[in-house]
Image (cartoon, rainbow, N blue to C red):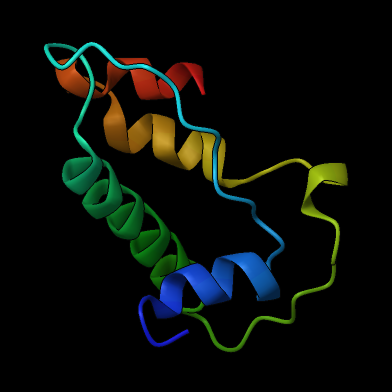
Length: 90
């Protein structure tokens, strides 16, 4: 928790697991720092929009069984960023 509150929130509140490591082409993919910053931006912006109208109750403790609203949100955020295009395949 002390190292990354977002990681704690995503893992224990939303049940989102860390993606598996994959070999990446540095000319196409983001490095670990860029990827971490981008993921923080995506989750922060999504959460801000989600809670803009008030508190939200987390109803599904098994997100793998529910459609993820983050995928289309991330897709819209990443469209047009050449180095981020590979992330859309995740």
